[in-house]
Length: 389
Ligand SMILES: Nc1ncnc2c1ncn2[C@@H]1O[C@H](COP(=O)(O)OP(=O)(O)OP(=O)(O)O)[C@@H](O)[C@H]1O
Ligand SMILES: [Mg+2]
Image 1: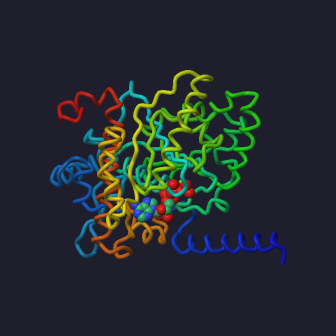
Image 2 (image 1 turned 60 degrees about the vertical axis):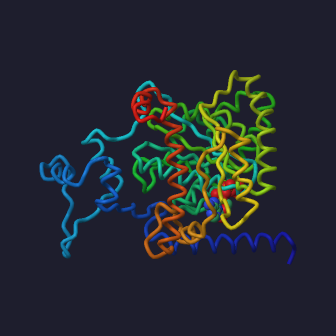
Image 3 (image 1 turned 30 degrees about the vertical axis):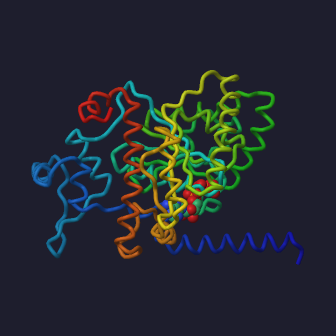
């Protein structure tokens, strides 16, 4: 066998493996997992109303009543039900008419620094809290796309990725948006062919730097329908990432607190300074509403990591998110079932491990939600009253 045929055989086998794992996890069509069901106890705080008020609205016909099952229990709520209830009670979180949609790049040049994990969990958390979210998979590795139940190279056609926009064939991104099984969480998927955009843009941007504005303009053409757009770029400062840095108006940089990761993150910031200087020379000021370092995959058993994390606030000040995300086996277990921590089914992960992990993701995401709301003028008064501004 030649090396080429060995490699192509390996690639084909890996593909079959991924297909088999995905087929085991997804019982329905690609990207169509059953939506999460919330109990009344879980739904109450999300709706922002107590049981009695929700029940009263159901009895009055303002809300669709729950069905009663044979065992006397009532069916739960989907996020779509919760959002309908929020609309009825006026409790849905929203940006105001004068507030800018937030376009957050979750970036780091270092591979495996938990960009996708951070993006997917943030998108689901923010959607669960009522925001209209768009997740844009900007990475040819397409991990975010896979997280929503697709085998990217089978289930996604390249014409539905960012490629036509980045190639200049399309000017609006409307063609690429697809709903997910999470209410108010849409996805622009990716697949391996998106890699072609790196070459295309590199050649073109040389003569025509405005090619780097295509992502920004494409997002601006559809952002009126969203509160938050999350961008998951590839782990390199290539042309796609440059477009992402230009398109974003906020930046979250996840990094594990290990020495090599910190070195890479430092290198990322140095490169970023140059990139932003170049972008500013061409297109005017790049103005991020917030820039935050997020410590992820913190190993609680590592003394050196603990020491590093203690040192970080002193050095980083308020550019560091106060809450770190710990390393957890729960993520691996959930991932084997094609799910995030917010989707995992009971019994697939030990309850205590899952609760601890979710708590850490919730804390970081709550902080992110606050940063988003702090950048919206229409939320200023409420936040001030709550002492959060
Ligand atoms: N808190 C965590 N605990 C345990 N494992 C984690 C945690 N966060 C991420 N991981 C794991 O680390 C690996 C890399 O994470 P992820 O894919 O999110 O990184 P990435 O930065 O998007 O990678 P890439 O640079 O390839 O796009 C994955 O296997 C993921 O499940
Ligand atoms: Mg990734």
